[in-house]
Every structure is written in structure tokens, then in C-alpha cells.
Image 1 (cartoon, rainbow, N blue to C red):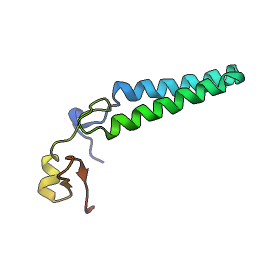
Image 2 (cartoon, rainbow, N blue to C red; image 1 turned 90 degrees about the vertical axis):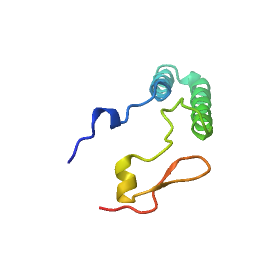
Image 3 (tube, helix red, strand yellow; image 1 turned 180 degrees about the vertical axis):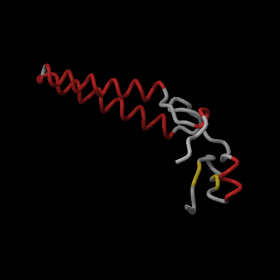
Image 4 (cartoon, one colour; image 1 turned 90 degrees about the horizontal axis):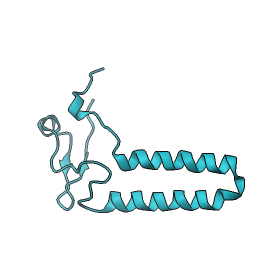
Length: 96
């Protein structure tokens, strides 16, 4: 197995870390005070809505960096292409 250089490894964005902490806190609050479950559920639903909006917003960087072009090795190997509307990676074929 090859290891990626440090700059290529995925690191969760601060918003994703905060979301994970919110989920853990909501679970703990529900366990400790079961009558608070509507507030915990509301917090999780709101968090998921925020993550969805951040993920669908074209130039939003709250979830991490946006890709504007594929890595050089993907272009050379012909493993994917960028869609013209958003510049998101779209792999049309997978090679072993």
C-alpha cells in the first residue's frame, strides 16, 4: 500500500469536527436527560441542514477546499474529468 504525501491526506474541516462533537453531545444529552431528546434531535437536524447547504453551495469552503482541477496523476492516467458546471471531480472509469 502506498502512502500519500502529507499535503494529499484528507483532514476534516473544522465544521465537520464541530458536527461530530455536536452529534456526540446530543447523544450524551439524550442519555443523561431523556426528556431533552427533542432539543437534541432539533440540533442534529439543523446541523445536517447546514452541512447540506454548505456542500451544495458552489464556492463554499466550509467543508474543505474546492477542487478546480484534477491531480496531475489522474489527468495522465485518464481516470476522470471535471464537469463544466461546477468543476467537481467525476470519475467515469476506474482502473486497477
